[in-house]
Length: 201
Image (cartoon, rainbow, N blue to C red; front, side, top):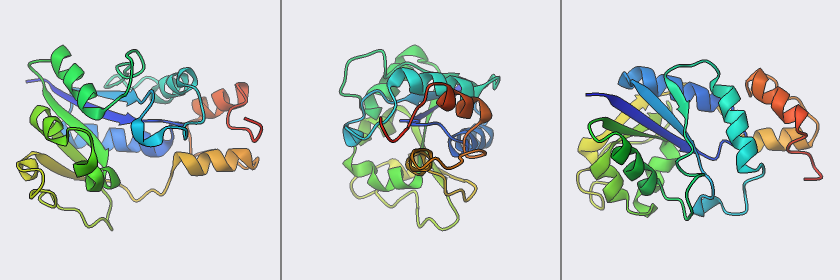
């Protein structure tokens, strides 16, 4: 059975933390394929996205580079909103009906999972993969009372302790500070070429 992963995010901009998360999860789960899915208009981040979806797609494409196991997915950007994770998983399942799906998220997202839109349906369609950091107090059964069956569908994967966030990168760029080594060189070049994340924007 083919093993397919889904990693969503705003990727505003994509950084090395995203890529390490993707690589570690793909390796740990022995994925045949991992879709990186930029969010078009996530309900919980309305008004917070700084770069257009076309810029974010272009940057993520450059970040992925020649990694044959990764693919940039337009699932969310090519359909009308609102864009919920359940819909993303449902669409991938329709495209790959015989595949085993793995929905990858960080520890913070896992903590908030009961507040997501239709989380029970996400659990029904895919296993939930949580990239856990050393200090995270996360267990597979922490939401079992409100999301029955989650404990059996949750997989914890240890990830490196990297405190990198897109918002911090944007702030450094606005201040004219370096973000080299926080983002891939190809992304850095794209940001400079298109004058993204400047104070005037």
